[in-house]
Amino acid sequence: MKYEFFIARRYLFSKKSHNAINIISGISACGVAIGAMALVCTLSVFNGFQDLVASLFTEFDPQLKVTLAEGKTTSIDHPGLKELRNRNDVAVYTPCMEDNALVVHNGKQYMVTVKGVDDSYNELVNIDHLMYPKPENGLNLHADVLEYGVLGIKLCARLGLQAFFENPLTIYAPKKGERVNMGNPLSSFNQDELNSPGMVFQVMQDKYDSQYIITSLGFAQRLFDQQGKVSHIELKMQPGTDLDKAQREIQEMMGKDFKVLNRHEQQEETFNIMAIEKFIAYLFLTFILMVACFNIIGSLSMLMIDKKRDVQTLRNLGATNNQLSHIFMLEGGLISILGAIIGIALGLGLCWAQQTYGLIRLGEAEGSFIIEAYPVSIHFIDVLLVFITVVVVSWLSIYFPVKYLSKNLV
Image (cartoon, rainbow, N blue to C red; front, side):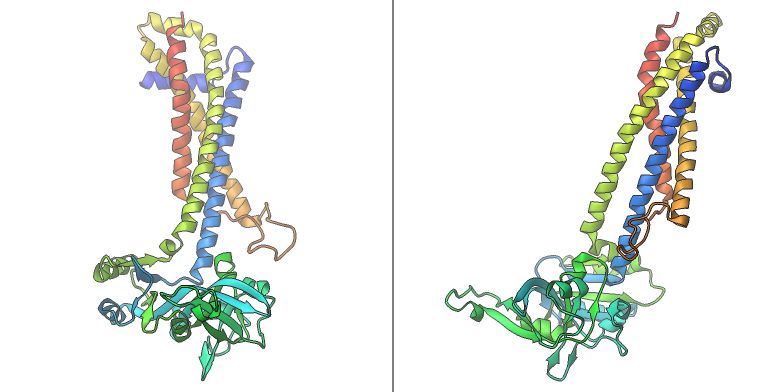
């Protein structure tokens, strides 16, 4: 194999009798390089968007969320939840009640998600950072007989409201276990009012900004006829806690009736969609790369014709068909590896330039998007995947043609 590699390497860099062969070999390597570069850049952009979405969700989602495996609510005095509250590694324990409701204001109505939380919510997430204007003394959701509701900024716009509105919102939720009375439909719904705290929140995610209302736990429990019950528990762990280990321990403690979700699992659908989009883009670019690799076959075919005398000499010296085919397959492999290295280097260079200078922007108008330029995040595993893909695809593209051509060399 050593002499086969030596000859293949010599054929790659030595001058051929026809300049066209050198040109075609160079074009083949460039085609592979462009394919590898496109793969690196595309996968890195998908990684950038995924990291961006993850950072935005992190502002609103708790570190760990304990919810029911089946059903909607459970008693707040559930033995497992009491044990969970007393864990030493739990810094903040926030019971929540979350369900859908109808909000009506000045003739406009909209389906929303009402999320009721207790007073510990201020310590659970960095909610002040999401509020406009920022509250001076933290988030206050009730005072005396008044209940307050903080709306997402897009929900405010859809209802035609500002951060502060004088007239309270009317919230409707169907009574549990009752059919709608067609003669008097309102009698089949619980009705309550939420006042304005003079602020809105913005997570920069449509799921939250256009659908959520944050209010007190007591209000949500009364509205949904779920006094003494919760839909889930949100947790903030002590600083330095190993979240993966804590998640496994809490899951084991709570049993199969509950699910313990980390931030990524809380948004599993979103990340699954992004992963599927990334995989489809990878497949399309791999097919394009395969077409580029077919150029290597043309280059090798011309090289075989050019080196016909060398092949005959090697046969006279005892070289077998397998050994001859190995020489030209190694030649094709060297072309693909050279193209892969050049393409990956160019792709990494473009990603660095995009990260540093923001060459490709999302739009001309400032403030129209969360970020000004396309986000890029380079993952080593993706770079390795691109290199392996190039090598495997090129090898599969040239294996059978080279085997056939080498047998027919006289």
